[in-house]
Image 1 (tube, rainbow, N blue to C red):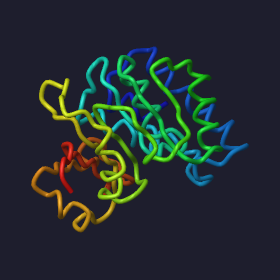
Image 2 (image 1 turned 90 degrees about the vertical axis):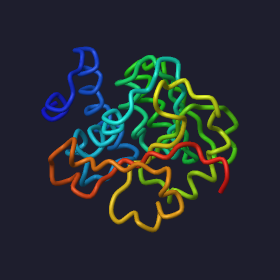
Image 3 (image 1 turned 30 degrees about the horizontal axis):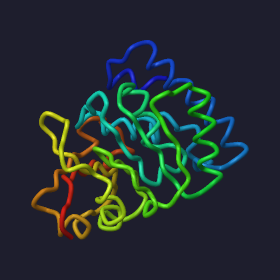
Image 4 (image 1 turned 90 degrees about the horizontal axis):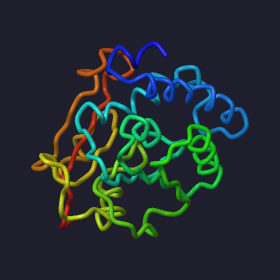
Length: 210
């Protein structure tokens, strides 16, 4: 693992777990394609480091609960669960083969702070503190699916409960309706690498009315 230690100060245990993701994903991706074949050799940068960008803008509190909606192959949820071992993560996706891979990787790493569920977002009824997602759907759709799940009372000392979206490209139309409460961070300000030039983290506090 070459890039992540350049951007984060991590314990040996966390580095070891993050490093273990690479052979695990290589093994499972040969059997069930959950990561683009052209990206699998760039897993550290394009998937693990990208997921961990959220940790540059928020430190999830101990005992908080975070929902990763449309987790796909487990991003950003699994890297964040390694980074925040005292935070509970629920990784949700409706596609069985993807959930199978996520379950196996969680087992392989013995992550005790991760729950994996196969269901549609509309069916999820648990309460959480934050929702995270990476390029699953437009913001409005994700908010409509999951705002019911976000608790009104926040346990974070400075950041109200809400959404963290990993997005790319021109987001003008997506954020127009929520511009007042929306915060954008350019991921390139954290990682000066070409891949992140147009990548952003969008934070939005819980939306009570649409």
